[in-house]
Amino acid sequence: MPALVTFCPTSVRPMRDMKPAPRAGHLTTAVVGTVLALAFPLLPSAAQAQTAEQSTLPASEPATPPPVLGPSLTGPLTLNPKPLLVDGGPLGPIGISGVVSVLGSVQSDPSPGDRHDRGLLTNGQLIVQSTEGPVQFYAQVGGYSIPTLGTPLIGARRYSRDTYGLVPVAYVKLVPSDHFSLQIGKLYTLQGAENAFSFQNFNVERGLLFNQTSTINRGVQTNVSAGRLSISVALTDGYYSKRYNWLSGTIGYAASPTDSVTLGLAANLGRTTKASFATPTVLNNGQLYFLSWTHTAGKLTLQPYVQVGHIPADPVLGIAHSVSTYGAALLGKYSLSSRFAVAARAEWIKSTGSAANGAPSLVYGPGSSAWSLTVTPTWQHGIFFVRPEASLVRAAKVAPGFGLGADLSHRSQVRGLVEAGIIF
Image (spheres, rainbow, N blue to C red):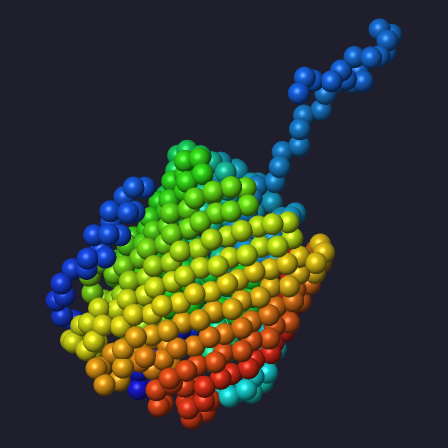
């Protein structure tokens, strides 16, 4: 695979030989730092109507609601409403849950290393967490694969080994008050509008815009809420680089019971030369911004968002010319009943630059663009679920050697799959 010239999704991150060099500070760094720093009368009861000879039963105490467990799910899938809870002593109740799911797929124009049809494990994860008290914890343990549009499907064993290990997420959470918390450890990223794992999202596969974002990072994150406003700020290692120079944050506002808006900003404050499967050097030395809106109206949920990425020029890193991406997506789901729902996603992304000026590839070669359509009917009954999915990726202005198919020259890919499993 040629250096610096390939689509750089979270699930397929190329190796690059890079050398460090000093770089001027970003104007964006100042912007990010500034923004993120801002951070009826009672009716008579039946007992009152009883005669003096009748004894009144004592009022029963209200049932204690079960703790709200993670991780975050956008639907249509839902977590088990009756998770296993064990006594954690001073930590309070400890929730034990998990996800086991497998996937079977067929596709056109598989990329090198992939096949026309295959099966794989998407989730084999156990989740242990506490949600009460001033000191809490969260740990997600097991194997996983993150299927992503327009990239090869990779088995859970290799994916887990080459990305975030068998403990992809694990952190301690300090909660001194209801409006402030601090998380330390391996964290979900604040970048982008889609979550990491298949069961967390509208669709089984992650999208083209997700390909530009980090997935899991290590560091510290603070969360503050005040009324309708919520702010999260994190100092992390970005694309899992072990270099803690990424500042990222989100600002959320609940405009109404049915509408909320989220602004996200992230930038590398320095330079990182590391290159690995999980750490693409080009993306790990850039900036990313997104703005999303979520609207819920009865059975319908819509989430449009826009996203912009920017990579400054750095000749010593092999980035001869700056490059940017511009993308937009519309995600949605409609619940047909308590068991059936249909989710869909449409998105478009474009990259600037050209091979002539030495710009790196962020999509399908410098200056390329792509769009996708994904439809995911979903059935869930109790802990069991089945999700068939159909997707189409279509690229334009594909640079030679950076497309789809065995010879990397094709411009489209159709994929059909079924994911089935349990959320316990």
